[in-house]
Amino acid sequence: MTQQHSAEFAYLVEGYHRFRQTGWARRRERWEQLSVSQEPKVMVIACSDSRVDPAQIFDVDPGEIFVVRNVAALVPPFETSPGLHGVSAALEFAVQVLKVKEIVVMGHGMCGGCKAALTQSLHGAPRGEGGFIADWIAMLSEAREPVAAEFGTEGRTAERAMEQAGVKVSLANLRTFPCVRRGEREGSLTLRGAFFAISDGVLHVLDEASGDFAPVA
Ligand SMILES: [Zn+2]
Image 1 (cartoon, rainbow, N blue to C red):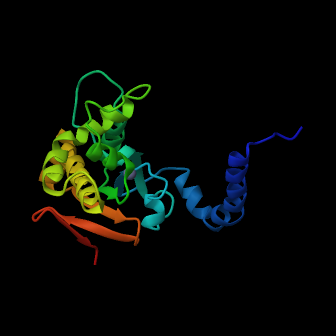
Image 2: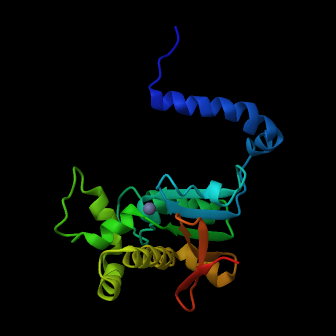
Image 3: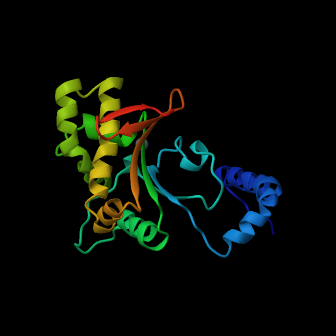
């Protein structure tokens, strides 16, 4: 009996068959190596947004980057309270086990999570069924204030400022993790802020000294 797929899943299966015929076959040797271990040198923290796939943007092969994606590419601060800390677990694994040398936080243009943080009164916003989004983007509350004061809460300039401020929040929170601070101090780990502008496909990199993002050379 043939299994019936939804149109959406059938579309994915079609892609999978193309991958098996071309992508997988072409890199078969690479996959064989990868079946033994992974040794990515870079961790990328990016948004779940369907338009900003780090592997596509950086044109890397399987096994090259260790990726965490979530709403607005956010890293929560180091917390020892009980809870399910998914980003922290991935971070710990990347830094302490895989020993990545670089962590790239990549924000992006037209980010829905950042826009919600900017435009909603976070306390008065509808909480949704679980309130998960509101709680998550509340991480941007503090960073929102200077952005809103300078640029208002609407329009591309304000949105971009919020998106870029979000990257800085994640970098600051990364530095609350002892293993990250130690890595930076010892020179074994570098943090990098980046921003991918969807409209023109240009990657910007943060200069932490000036706080400005500029197109990457
Ligand atoms: Zn986003």
